[in-house]
Amino acid sequence: MIGVFDSGHGGLTIFRELTARFPKLSWMYYGDHANAPYGNRAGTEVVDLTQAAVAKLFLAGCKLVILGCNTATAVAGKTLQQTWLPHVNAQRPGHRVLGIIAPTVEAVTQTPWHVKEPVFPQKYNTDTVALFATQVTVNSGVYEAEIAKRCPQVRVLKMACPKLVPLIEAGAPQADLAAAVTDYVVALLATTEIAPAYAILGCTHYPLVAQHFRAALPPATRLLNQPLAVANALEDYFVRHPEVASGAHAGLIQYFTSGEVGEVSRVAELFLGAPVRFGKL
Ligand code: DGL
Image (cartoon, rainbow, N blue to C red; front, side):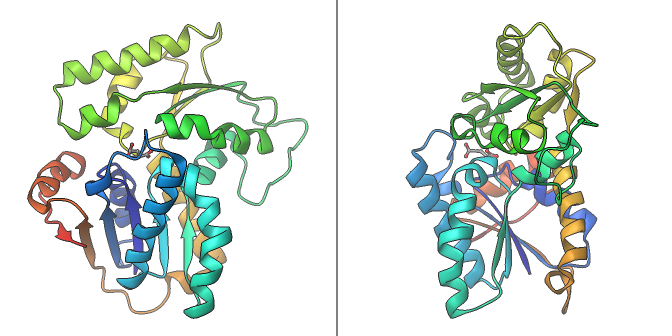
């Protein structure tokens, strides 16, 4: 079974893509709604909460957990992989954690996973990339560091959008969402003369307001589809690690939350476009 974790509902945009792409695998979603949002928390809190959530998914039987949250990936991903997982695996081997930032950066720089060093001349130098994300993700500097490793000449323009997650979670009217998105896009565009080649919606909630980003951004700016990039990277990962996708597959899909199951299930419908029932974990 493969687990997907997010602070709340945002990871469902990733989960929906993954379950559609790999329907024969069994999947478990866990949203830490009781502690969401993570996007304005201290880094140490995000690490502790993410570790506790991943531990729950491991205990529930997941061997691989995907952090379907940019904030958790940016702040906790490397710490969990490098300092916590070795302890977990010393007791019960075979557990893995993957983030969603590297697949996104690979897609935006068109630099596949195995290219770790800058390649000159840059075949796909996209010049300017716009990043819209939570405050924590923006502060972490992880996106520009990962982009610089692959394409050092790319300029990354960043905009924290702290109003968006609360508005999306609250099911705010489209006019309010459009106005908030437009304000952030206008503020970012004021810092550049050149239309960004790509815009990364670096928060898993933002695909729900992608149409407002599309409308506010210049037509020449391509919107990166993060759920698609993550699904493509996972397909590639399964080729390299076939053992992760092997075994008995019931095609089971389960949803869990630390929050209030009725309310969480209601809001989840906004993300999935279909009714879904969450359990408590
Ligand atoms: N969905 C999370 C992300 O991708 C952020 C939501 C939150 O602030 O908790 O960054």
